[in-house]
Amino acid sequence: MGTIRKSFILVVVLLSLGCGLALAQETPPTPENPLLKPVSQWQYSDTFVYLRQGGIMAGMLLGLENQAVVLSVPQGRRAIPLADIARVVIKPEKKGNANFVFGMLLGIYARNLLYGHAEGKPFGYMGRIGSPLGFALSNSFFAAVGGAIVVLIDPLGEANEQRFDFSEAGLERQAQWERLRQCLSGVPSEPKVHLTVMGGAIMAGSIGRYNRSLESAGYVLGSYYPQYDQGQSYDVSSGNFTMFRKIQLTLNLGHAFEVGLAYCPLAEPTAIAGKYQQTYMGDQEIDTNFHTIQTLAASGFYAVAVYKPFSGRLPKPFSWSIGLGLGAARVNYHLNNSMATEVLHNGYYVSYQNQEGGFGYSRTRPSGVVYTQFECFLYRSLSLGLIADFVYVPSVRVPAFPEMGLSAQSLRFGNASVGFVLGAHF
Image (tube, rainbow, N blue to C red; front, side, top):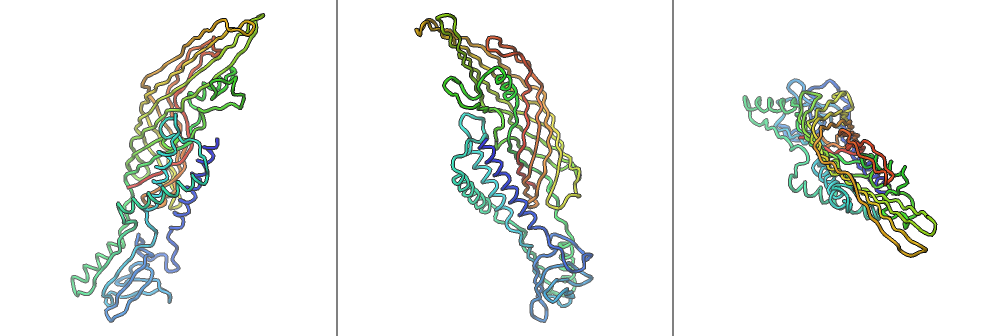
């Protein structure tokens, strides 16, 4: 539980940071005429107007009005006629470097995916966190390195400044004015491709369900020799945190719909359980050790459709979507049981017997996934959010093992999760 708690804290911190960055970048309302057109990505940017008579007028760009550039300057609203303008330089609103923030998050994700991996668990599952300080310092280092690498690859974290030269007369000046008008009237195109990765805490799947029957039969979860471990039960099959729950690629299909493909690793950590039973028959002592081992290697591929019911109606940095996927899952499940019986007479060894059995299942089955996610857009091309999902795989009947005290039952190899989603949008 310590790993889950600390991983949850990490996700909350990242989300808080992301929401803070996104909200901090909201364009402030102008005290001037709100109906001034055009409204574009350049509005409220720092603008420098070089005058034909000499001098520079600097202010915040509000837009165009007739044949004039309108600025917000310390003295108030100022409209500068085209006839008085020699050159206009528009610098983009200072929003920081989106690539650096993306690199930071990618560095943190890569660190926990690759170096936080737990030995003996499927790829992506996190192990125990030792020192919280060391964990924080390690993530900070990878965040800085990731940000630096991405910026080195593509240093443009914001739009380049725009320059318009009105020094020429006649048609050339009018052409520059038209270019300025089109630039300010242009609305940035919405991202059309969405790549998301998800991590989260896995709820009890097939292994977790079978563990409940093991507990009812007196088995100690997470312990192979419970007679030597009298501590609490360790359920290692449920509540595990993985950094690689799902990867998904979708394309826009209209304003509120997306379609694409998703891959979901469904493997769960190997689970062991044991039970020790001691009985007496006269001078004979019978010691019996029951052992079970469960392994699940599974993955699903899905065609997904995504719907955003409140597209365009939520506040600017937020998005809520619902997704449904249909496809197939490849399942490899194995249950190995063993029962070792030792007979002693007056403390002396008499006989030993070992019985083994189990159940195996390996097949591709139809499968489906449904999820809902709430995202906060740090930038147009980067989002961070929360997600909950459920993967369905048809149930399989596991036979009874009466000698082990286990009854027959049906197991579904799908599972559910709650976690985070990191998105890149192009």
